[in-house]
Length: 485
Image (cartoon, rainbow, N blue to C red; front, side, top):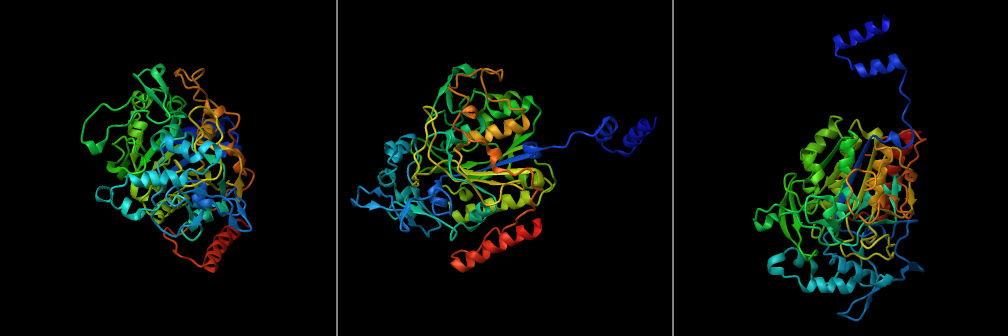
């Protein structure tokens, strides 16, 4: 009788009855392990290799050195010199070609020395009269052997110092942005002859381009008919959203180095925003889950973040040349700060990566899992209140690890697998189950109390001295140490 009265009063008072029911039936078991993470946010930036951002980071597998000097180089066919990695102080880079052919040429059978030659080839196609400021910023010289460090990207280095840096994160496919973003949400890149999953065939480079806004031509666009993660999320009742920044995106065709800008927003499917063209998203009535980035800030502020989020930048803040890296770092810091200020922070994992190597040098030969990948190494960071502090993860990872983590956290380990998911497509393998793929759970310490936010200035000082940098780093360390003691 007393329990009935409690429930009746809860109804009259507008109190959530589910909590009362749980108490009446016995408390629900507490969340443990991976299930402490109730929000996964994937922030995908553009076009940087691991060595170009973290090649000199302490204790990471960075640029090989002998007596403090780089011990690797890439031949420059224009000068017959072998160019060694060097510190690049510029805020705007040009990068190099990043098609499938360019990936193979850069890797050069494992020699990892094709970068200068490919950049020369790309720059030869650069027309300053039509592609400025990209070509004007290049000055006719490749910059793919340049690297940045704490002097240009201090916040990324602070995140690595206080959370987790992954130094074997490989792009899922050896190609450019569109296939990379398809792998990010589906574990595959394919070209389909119809809306039927069985009509799809592997496509490492040309999966079918969304209608090009720059051409002003209305077309039906491609059919991404194979199964993506949202299909399983929908089936299991797990919330998701894709947040898309408004602005421009590079409207690449066959040449993925120099691209004409095209408008981008949540309503324009593009090379960075392919989800609206997936048959599952359309048939499940979830195209409306692809929303403006402005919605993200509101969702974070008011505690409405979904279980799974993908965040897509606009060109100006993407790190994709010719975007300024300072603008990209400011944008990412703003996203992370927004999450840290939100009610969701204590149960969130932020995965930050760059979709492809952008033609920039990296010294690690990618392992092979199938005919489409892996591609070259890219920076990877985990930021979470449960992240291990200052940990460098040496596991072999790819974007497939994000799918695996979400599936293990929210879907009871279900996979995008044609044998079990109810939508048989002819994908050659289940990438989440690749034996070489590491487990992101190792980057967490779920036994520790959730760590408090580490809010960083969106625009830290540029051109810090080494003393300024050490003070900046010490301040971040002290903030975490004092708040967790």
